[in-house]
Image 1 (cartoon, rainbow, N blue to C red):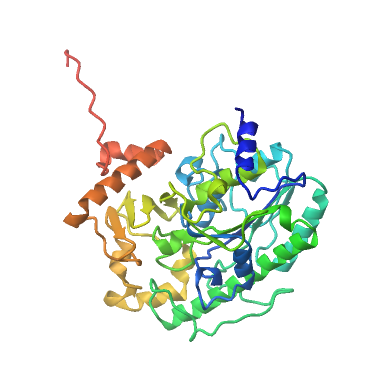
Image 2: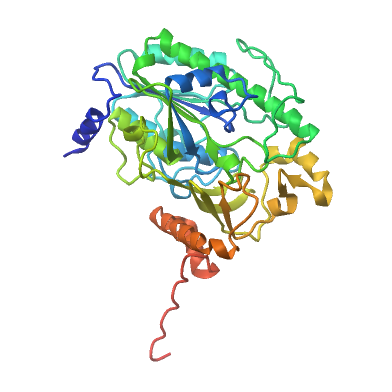
Length: 472
């Protein structure tokens, strides 16, 4: 059975794929630094009616995770289906950071184009080299001006005619804009401020005045993003493309606060994923554990496009989209290396339904800060607490100086504060997850694995010394 026959059989077995000759379009909507702060995920502070509507019309994943909580590196994974330590874009792509895909990497939009798709992006891409994609419509338009973005999207869709299209929409909200969240008036966007006194401060942050002020600004930026999502859904309806378009909404990493963005704690990795597939049952909740390496194979699967000539690190979740509890989707891996070039803190790990294991490759380093997080009122307010300062329930000293291995029971300790790596009762779990992470690194050809030969990395044996010749 060849590739196209295999795909055809997959679609035939998947009831929500309508048998139609209409173009099979894909709209990928990516938020910038949005955690689980939507009504669909139970946040009562958030005002996200459009995302909640999308959730009611589609499938909401309860256990979706990015692989690295850093904008550029995370997007490199989304667009390639490869972990960032394998695709070459280990951190930021812009300015002096200038990290980029390795020469063999083929981002999936380029593969869609080879299959006859019209492709375009609007707003934030943050992956290099841009020419590798071969976009039919590259529009790096400001990602907060959502009205203009939707207008560009409408023109792109109308211009596709009867051709299938892929549209990549990179919002900039609710990412920080320097020291604030760019909460200003934009054309066509309703001004929706939040009262700092009434917002819910996440348990992984301290309840300080500066924190409340910034969390309120974050929620307002998230509302602007939500309005943009609604505009794009309206465009699909207006152009008659709503019921033949796979719509995927997701975020690149968690909220831009300490303990979340750039961290491998759940506040940074556990994110929204809402999928509206043509013909799929609406309003479903899917408990499968998926990560962002699955986005590329899922979209290629839906489009019937040929994959690259090398194995991807994820798998399509289309066959289990309508299953509440699919078997065999019970763990995900993650891998962080850089944020900015000065933010080097490589971590490799695994998240199961109960536990998380992290291997910090250089625990002797102080955990670094993204520039916008360091300058924030939140972090500067935390520092004013001196020796008694905490980041949520975590002492600042513990936040900045981490153990080589971290093991957490997520069910009993959701804020991941009590490290069980040194607890005798958890040694069997530690060994099991340590070995799984080592196997994951070998399978994905992690270049940092060479450290095990001379650094004594747990879970691997150092390379044997060369044998001496008899004459030596």
